[in-house]
Amino acid sequence: MLSRTKLIFLPNCSCEDSFILLNETCRKTILPEPSFNQRTPKIHDMKFRFLIYFTFIFNLAFAQVNDQQYFQPPVKIPIVLSGNFGELRPNHFHSGIDIRTNGKIGLPIYAAADGYISRIKVSPWGFGHAIYINHPNGTTTVYGHLSLFRKDIAEYVKDRQYKGESFAVDFAVPTDKFKVKQGEQIAWSGNSGGSAGPHLHFEIRNTKSEHPLNPLQFHLPVSDDIKPKVLSVMVYPLSDDAHVYGKPEKRLFETVFYGSSYHIKRDPTILVYGKVGFGIQTLDYLDGSWSKCGVYQIKLSVDGKPVYTFRMDELSFAQTRYVNSQMDYGYYRQHYKKIQRSWVQPGNKLDNYHNLVNRGIVDLSDGKRHAIHYEIKDVYGNTSTLDFRVQSKKEKVTPIAKVGQLIPWNEASDFDGGDLKAHFDDGTFYSSFNMDFKKKSSNNLYSSPLYELENDETPVQKFYTLKIKADQVPIDLWNKALIATVSEKSGHKWSMGGKYKDGWIVAKVRQLGTFAISVDTIAPTIRPLSIYGHSRLREQNRIRFKIEDDFSGIDRYRGEIDGKWVLFEYNPKYDMITYHIDGDRLKLGKNHNLVLTVVDNKGNVAKYEATFYR
Image 1 (cartoon, rainbow, N blue to C red):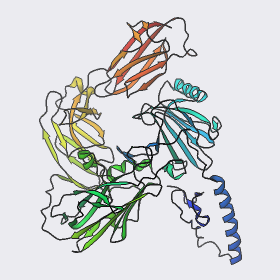
Image 2: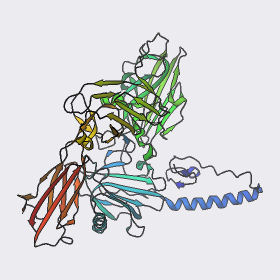
Image 3: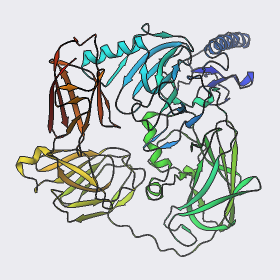
Image 4: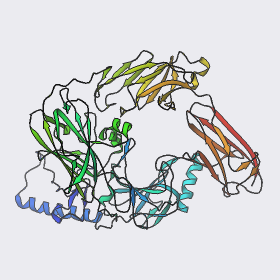
């Protein structure tokens, strides 16, 4: 979290409210109270000291951010977004904005403000090629999925890669190495890392906490006159006596729009009882884009009294996986609809909730009718509302049978299924539940039975230890065995990793579902794209290979020419590595010997050798 003394000036606030905490909008700052050990000053001393303090803080804050143009756009085309801050993504909230680059790679990228490059990261995953710039106002901007760095930056990075003999690097940059001015070009846009298409991922972070802040609150020229959309509402019975229309299961209600607000289709008065939670399926669009974006704020009121507010001003990377509790993870896995809970599960530690009353859970056991009101906002203040009614009516309810061992969310626990065992730390799950378990026969694809541990619709916050008895694994394959998760619908399997230990295969996993032991004895494949017949170079300026592994995954690779490491860039989206022939590091006009070694996660090795002239 931000320091309580970290102040900043926001130009869109009135003067009297202009001193605010960076992560709060137009909130007046209260000066710290003196301790009991301090003497009580005279009134004129207090006024004088307050005036000095106020003047100092005003000058300091105003110098940090003194106009609405502190950050300029990192691109010189109209900004159209394909993704916004805080939207729900697989296992994380989106930490920035995704700026469209006209579907192209190679758009110039510029520093959003004066500062210095503080960090550079290159990875096959995540942000791919990324630059971090620190600014005097206490923020850091991040530019991700780049294709190329500026020439001097690129050479600096390449030197680090050759020094460490690694394509993937992540390092701090000395403060005086690359000082930049606002609008100075730093790179070109791309599609590197985990990007699904060409765009620029752009973030503004608090430098001290490294928490991403909502970039759309910093006056970037993004046009948005579209109100959020509300698609449906979910009602959740949460106590043993709770129901919706007499049944203890959650129920979805679709919405319609009329009379300037949203309503539940056919406008029913929903019959409910007990402790109940509500959820909402909502999204936002921005001008010029059909991309489905996240909303900024969800506020729920019952009979005019707020009980829940969720707001996206700031994020913590340590908390981003709580997205799996913010949305109904199981319903999404089943129906691909993102229902955002308007109540907080006990194991959800996300800091983005405000004005909670009983964690947003509503007690509807009074036999009365209640008015439910949602207010949904985007960051520009475009607002949609949803209104409906519920009637508390007690009915006899047959509770859903609870099968299996109770797993408490707030205590460490051990599960013993005989040939399968698991250990869960406290906080592994978001709420307590009964763990169902089934053992099923397998086939020759696996070296154990299939074990169904609950299901893959139950989200997991923390890694837990899972182990399966390895008595069906031959001794000579112990080092090739791992735990696989299996889709019984498709038959596909994925490696969860793991190692043999004392008769068990043990792995750290972060999901539930169906598991079994499998072995991987097959080496990765190497297919040359630039060399024919291990001798003739088909491409004069680069050497490319397609490298693949069908199960445990590629752990590492190493390319050498004439016995020296060379930089092969890895693009896992296309299973491709590329060496751009570097005349400064490779002596040309002679025969060269190339050796490429690829190793998977179970130690299976593939090797390719060639001799070529260049």
